[in-house]
Image (cartoon, rainbow, N blue to C red; front, top):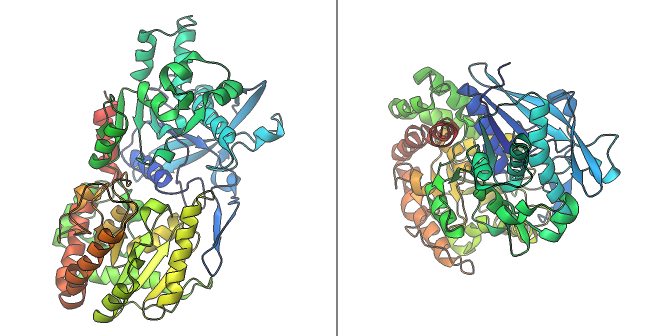
Length: 565
């Protein structure tokens, strides 16, 4: 195997497949989609993540929406192969030993990208260290800090042990992996037989590092007290020099300071990030999704007939504009039927009344974080009921997990369940538990409209609407994240309002009112009374947004903007 001049892609979570629960949401699924497109494009890349033996968590819900979390144990040896090399990192007064497992991502051309999942559950480790790679985003701060050292420092050492000695670029997907920069600097100093880093040494590391920041939410940028860092990982002047401020180690600052290229994940997000981190040059590479993964079988068959090169060249989906509307509608009804069947066969008490394939259906499925405002539809229950009455009914499909420590997100799930109990059977509702990649694929292809209503400007990108677009599902969305670029009003979908300035987090009324008005005046009249025009918007969603907002285009941008620089 040629180990030369590869790209090393580091991520704390990677959505490889539904049966491998090493992801929590959009960040991990994006990482998986990125690797799938890298494989399709035959890019010479490798990836590093943690094994997460107990996954993120399995979500169960009480009838009132109270969330419970259980370990997501998975069959590691059925999906990955244990490799021989071991490395270690020094923590406190001991060595933490690290092994790895390999998962192969195979592209449409047959090209494979190895993913190395780091594992500390080894007999030679202390008991507390054996659990370091058990839970994604679990435990207290110290657990997270050491996890990130395993990923960044241990990940570089594992690549070296595997024979990857001449890697061209190291791409950090979010700041969790930022300590890889310190290991590269350590290598640089060892090579030059030096103990103190100069500007020249720092520049040598920067030339090899790429950093993608994903969130305008402050909690998404990991920070650790410097006292804890010194106690766990040893005193290192570089922690303070390139990543420390105010007595903390800021992983985002560490990555920013030691990367030659940094980007946000949408044009709007890059603008927000530049305001958050003044003094840094932050470009934008708008996210995408892997077309072959997220296109449902009915639409994949349709594309195979009309634009057969679409899997190898996603831009070919622009020719979907020539597909007859009746065929678009038939494919959609088939995908919608699969969703409705799943909902009606659900035995978890989270469906207030059986659904049917003819009623207009809105979908909302993503992480249940408070800023995503899953419950915005219920801001004015009477108005929502009137809309349903005026237009012959309404169906709502929800899914999403809240982080175990996010009380606000958990309360939001309960509010949706309370609305479900209040509205049935006037408005048919379902909340499908344990949202994962498989369930996400069914929902994003089976509803009639995709809803996205975050508090502006908290949505970095958002990719669920891109998955929906591949299946001809238009979005009704706040102008934030990718929708600032993807929205052509009345052509690919609709904006909830024309507003782009920050929302008032304490008053959702204006956005809710604008959403109801858009449903009443634009979306539902088109769907109910001028169906061909609605299907034309569906077709445009594929031809205009599906052909562009994909990880194939995204990876090609990274190659030209970051990897070849």
